[in-house]
Image (cartoon, rainbow, N blue to C red; front, side, top):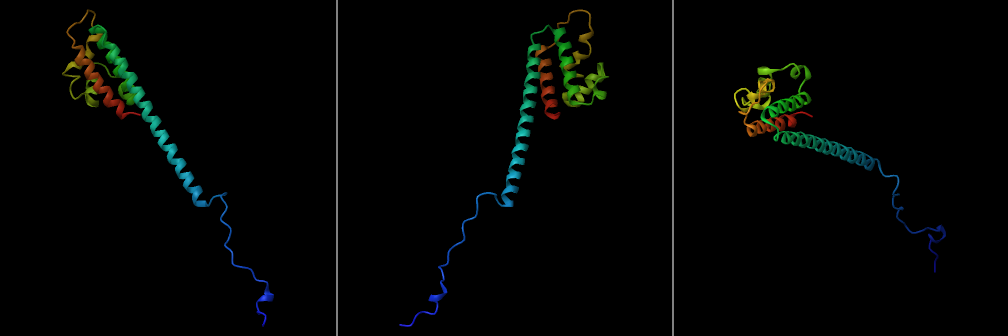
Length: 159
């Protein structure tokens, strides 16, 4: 028998390349990891902001509810003070701070009162805090509801 001409070449079988290493990952995985990490940070930041805003709104509305047990003249004064604090948080200080009387009520109407401060239950805010005698003609529930609506609307706007 004739020997095979390839027998002297000492050839080996074809074998597959080894599987790729686990580490370090390819550049695409690094990019994907960075994008996912950035997205998680952005979502976490947004959720924290929403949580803080809701907590602040709940605290302020709780303070408003606590005022509902006050006498009518104290209620008007305290509600006006609370509304001013919220306005200073949400609007420019130079726009809000100097306002008093009718200008203050007009500002409240312009920023969400829809006329209820100058011609509705909120008109007592301009005069009652400065009266010397007790006042009992104030509709406490309407004033609290109006203040709650204005606070909720404006705290939603400001950051």
